[in-house]
Length: 152
Image (cartoon, rainbow, N blue to C red; front, top):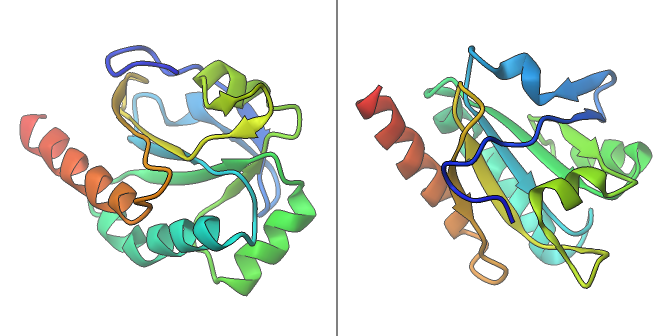
């Protein structure tokens, strides 16, 4: 798994709203909150997505962009986002190449629940891995974004 202080691997993935999310598009402009999750519509993944949905305005106060990534296809993401009124893009990593690059696969195929906060320069400033304590991701992200904002 990539480490805090390491340059975050760049990637380009299709998103459910149409088009493509490129991490490099945010470099020099805004932080990114990239979270990986196992599967649309599962209990814990739904809780996590709704947590980011509910905290989206707080994250936006720091100018950060949120992106959820799983191996599900775009059609699944479209339905998941619609049903749960998600206000941020979901990306499909069907090949799992981005998951591999970030080191979030266990047993070579299962996506671990992990969130990375990437600063404007493309450096990972935070890594949060809570398989069970899903609600902690949002709080951890907001605390780090606040700290980054104070120190900038």
